[in-house]
Image: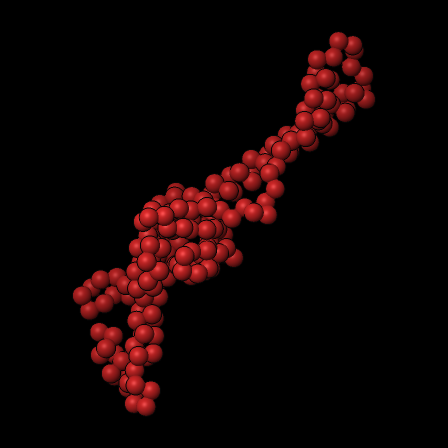
Length: 182
């Protein structure tokens, strides 16, 4: 996926650069029409050929429809993730990530959790802030001292920032880190 920020509006596209357009071969459709509009008596061989062509055309249409449906499912799911994590995709700030589980997105797009899992698995999204695995946007949550739900990814980012900023000659103790995290 590719997410761009165009003046505060997020735009989502599916990277389909290497995906060819699938179309039915017109010759087979014309052959089928010829057989069905034929004035002479159809032989058994012609009937078999017509049946074969019809089965292949139907299978090709089914395949093309399945590819279109997959495309739609991918875009719908990623669109829901993008909206759910809108503040992150606008700023690139890890602390703006909301806790999100597969069920959150499944509920929004009315698809099964297993479908959302398959979409998130082994897929990547290119953003203005880098390219990330889709599953990295899913995280559990913890409650802060005010009772608010915070993404575990946000907690890790805050802890990392604290440790990076500390005096390396006199690092924080575990207790000091706990107090700072509170």
